[in-house]
Every structure is written in C-alpha cells, then in structure tokens.
Amino acid sequence: MIKLILMLLSGAVVGYILRKKFSKTFSLGKALMIIICLLLFIMGIDLGYNETLIPRLQIGDQNITLPSFAPRVKMTSKMISIIVTSFILAVVVMAITAFNAKIFSRFVNKAVISGQDSANAETQQMPDIPQHSSFKEKLAAWKDSFFILGSFILGVVLSLYEAVPNSPHIKTLSMYTLYILIIIVGLSIGMDSKIFQTIKSFPKKMLALPLLTIISTFIGGAISFILLRWMSASEYVYGTSFLDSLGVSCGLGYYSLSSLMLNEIRGAEIGTIALAFNILRELMTIVLAPVLVKYFSPLAPISCGGATTGDSTLPAIQRACGNEYVPLSIFHGISVDTSVPFLITFISTLY
Image (cartoon, rainbow, N blue to C red):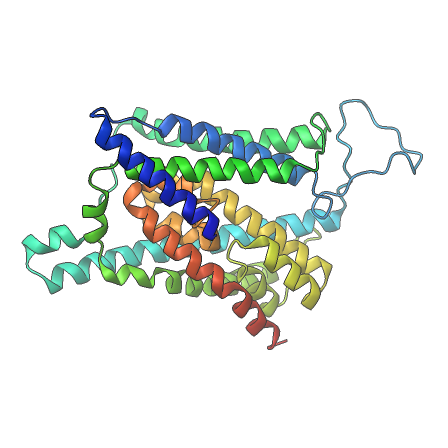
C-alpha cells in the first residue's frame, strides 16, 4: 500500500510539472481505460487457472476424452453452489452498500446546507458528477463497463481453454500493470488545476465513510443469510450459517487474507466462498463504477470497493468519480483494509 501511495504521489508531482511547463492539458482517459482493460484481462487469466475455484480435469491420469473445443475444467455441483452463493452474497452486499452510500451522501449535503448560509454551503458540498441525459450519452456511460467486463471474460475463457499459457509470472505482470495504472492516476491528479480547491471543499463528515462501509457490509451479510436460507433447498446454493455469512462479508474485498483466515477457521468450503465473494466484489466495483455513480452516488463505488479502493479499484473510481475523490478513496481503502483481520477475528470468537 505504501509503495502504491508513493507511486501516486510521484505521478502527481510529474503531472504538476507538466501542467506548469505546458499550457495544453493532456487527456489520459483513453490510456487509463486501455490499461484497466488489460488489468482485467490478466485477472481473468489468473482466475481461470485458479484451481481452488475452477478444478481442472487430470486427463493424463484418467481415461477421459474431450472434444478439442471443450474446456479442460471439472465443475461439480458443489463448486457451482459455492460460486452461486458467492455471487448472491456479492450482489446483496453491493446493493445494500450502494444504497446506504446514497443516503449518506444526501445526509452530508443536507447537514452542510443546514449548518451554513447558502453561499458557503455551495462550496462545502460534494462535487457534482455530470449526468447523462440523452440515450446516446447513457449508452456511452455503459460502453466502458462492457469493454472492461468483456476483457475479464475473454481472459477467463482463454485460460479455461488453455489458449494462453499458465505462466508463473502472471501475478507479476498484474502487479506491474497496476503500478502503471496508479502512476497514470497520479499524473491525472497533478494535471488538474482545481484538485486542491475541490479537496478543501469536501465536508469533513465524509471521513465517516469507512465506518458506513463496514456497517453496510454487516447488514448485507445478514440479509444474504436470510436469502440463502430461503434458497437452501436448491442443490446449487450452499447453505451458510449466520456467522459464516458475516465472516465472508467481512473480507471487504481483501480476498487473499480473508480466504486464508476463514479457510483455517471454518474449512475449505467457507474459505473458497470468501475468495470468490471478494474477487466478485472487486470485479463488480471496477465494472459498475460508472453505473454506481449515476444511479446512487459518487460515494457508492468507493464504499462498494471496500479494502481495494486504495489500489486495484482506485483507477476505475478515479475515472468514474473524478480526481477530487482519489484522496477519499485512498483514505477509505487504508482504513477498511486495516479493519479486516480484526473483524474476522471478532466473528471467529462468536462461533
């Protein structure tokens, strides 16, 4: 996290120097979009080769013949139920979190207006996000999401068919791609002449956003438990206990740590659900960031991103919300990231 923040600051300094040296403003939107798609493509390849989530057929050890067009994977009903359960958890938690972020943003603006005169209140409210009115503009807003999701799906499909090699360097490539993204975000901030003025105008109450995210996640986990209990008769839904639902939700997008901790505490099935749920939460935040901003609030993708808003989801948030939301996103990511091990440890003491 510290390395990413240093890269962001370095990019911002270079961007500031470029802004002072050249009168022309450079747009980095297209470059940011291309590299986000590349990162999601690499994530898709990595996920497709993840045998914890998608077991592969051992064709050499078994008398198995497959058509040349068939993917070399083995999907049991148990694995399908784990993936479906993780998806339901992710959708419910994301929906509750986005809705609460919308209410919170209205509360913040209302509190600012009621506590100040109208002239000062205008400078202390959250920055507005441009709204798309025509059908063409709305379609353009969705276009980026389709490209990002398509890049991820392409990576998954190619890895399932083993059309791309399962290189041990795939995680390294993903890491360096993320570094490039963070530097571009920093450049974009440095080139923005109004960034510091906008940051000063942010209401201080918005610093409570990490707490809102944690509370919303607990609520989402509780509602998910009720929904999953109702659907548990189906063989394609894995029945989780109330504490399991809360424990998985408390990963807050930090899939590596949460899945390992829950694997030790509750076993492989719950650990795998935690892995899939938190990967889905991260992916959905990146893909749906523009939609969350439009229909909920600029705070929605930050809150939905959980512990990832200081690194992997930061470029998508910056692109959807603007440079002025980057400092809040980093603060939110660090705060939530730090809370994850404590929350899971607390839940584990209740079993």
